[in-house]
Image (cartoon, rainbow over the protein chains, first blue to last red):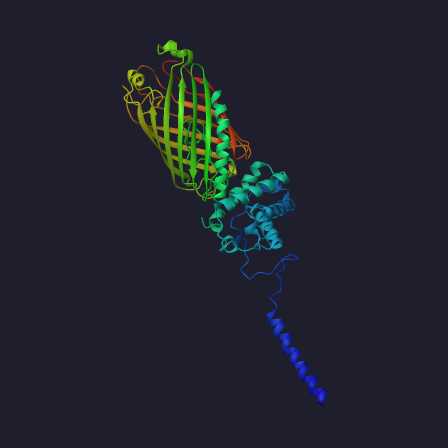
Length: 174
Length: 291
């Protein structure tokens, strides 16, 4: 009888603990997240968050060697920016796995590659970071180096930069 | 040319300045390659002949940039040399100084002013960006717009008066609009200038045919790579003197930035008739060193 009571109390206690643990566990990672990615606070997912409409000219996407080429470029860009003395203090705050995925989606979307963009909008993603014009220029230079390394022709590089450039207004304070 | 030797010496001191700017956290060299233009014939940031709305040097909104230039143009019957210094402050303001030498060489004897007679002119310039961002505002039609002033002082007061010029000093005012069409890899500039300068001021200011008038400058440049641009320019000039006709000027140029410290501009320039000598054309070479 005593044992049964003890078991009952234990069951209730365990149930309560389990319930509390369940309540504390964050929502499961969204379907588009890749392994190793930190989970972020929920937000409304929309292609409009990419901050630019897709290019209609498919030739530019092909000049970037498709999604695989964009993945290589973004991989290189982010790795460069994590070590570049001009940008590393900014990038240290980012989840490297997630930023590579969202940037690659964004570029693929903007170049008309048909990718969905699942990241946050530019204002939300860079809020309170205090980015300035010279930070943007450093990022552009790193992106140019990464595009050079992928062998993207200069004219095609500029087609992308023309799409990204106006985002400076949302990303930086000055 | 000797002028390029002195430039080499000056480069070291400019680079030392760049080091101090970095130490003071003024973020030097944070602008993109070639986006400040090159040093034009009057020492302002622009193309070869035109002044642009961009500020010179590689200092972005949080920084300063500065440079020295040396330019030589070997025309059919004359030689034009120039050196100067300019600084761009916070991507908003530009100040510049240039000293031009217009060497008449053998032509001086034919003109009766003596072989090798040389006119000099000091040009003090300032420019302020009013509105727009030529680089980043890719979704807006509004170009980057700047106003500028250039005060010019010729050292051959007596001779320019004898040639009919009303003054040996003059001030140009200009409004420049520059737009980078990144998707097309093109840069377009248009400038309106109020000036009385005869041959940029080298033959004084104003004359029997008129004084101050409104002139235009236009540049188109195609960016072939981050480092290399090809372009063409047009600049109208007043025609104030009675003894000789003055024509508009055109050039085609290539500008190459080795890095953010050194760039070279080579051009073929046609300045038209100068002091009765027809069709003054020739090669123009300019070096710019800075940060």
